[in-house]
Amino acid sequence: MVLNVIYYITGTSLPYYCKYIFNDDALYSGLYLMETVLTIGVVILICPILLRKFGKRNMSLYGMIFALIGHFIYTLNPLDFNWVIFSCVMRGIGFAPLRSVIFGFLGDVVEYAQWKFHVRQEGLIFSGGSVGTKIGSGLTSAVITSLMSYSGYVSSTSGNAVQPQSAIDMIVNIYQWGPIVVCAVTIITLLFYKLDKIYPQIMADLKEREARGEL
Image (cartoon, rainbow, N blue to C red):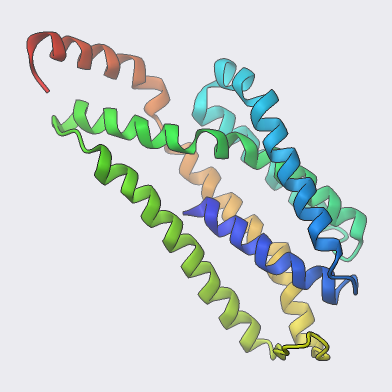
């Protein structure tokens, strides 16, 4: 859910940011492409190495802390385009580890549920990931729409409407503080994730049960 929240925040607010802060909405495509390429590149080239060294939880946690630090630095000068580029670079690198193993986390929960409760529910658990995706994007869309409406944003089919300063400030605040809140929530969630430590014992116990014909 939080992954979809952060991507929806940046994907929705960054085009407005480019249009009304830098007066060039064409800048968004370049920023989006750069962040996506960095994410994919880190996932393909680096994440397998980091995964073997740190495990899913620690790799993802360090990545989110890296992204959060980068975004904090960007907030020192949020109206400079170069700092927005810096934010996209840090975010693309920092989010890549978690994005690469998110479904692995769900798979671990399947094994844990069987180990703890003697019930194996792959379909139910993975559907929870799908529900989280929909909740994350739907909730974020509703919140952003409400905030923009509250700020007095003027909708226009031509895109030439003059926005009040309150709407400009809201665009900056959403892009500036939204990712920080979500990164913090993600970091706190990962700090409570303990399955990496006990996963070898879980699998050993399940293998032993299977040999005895138990679930």
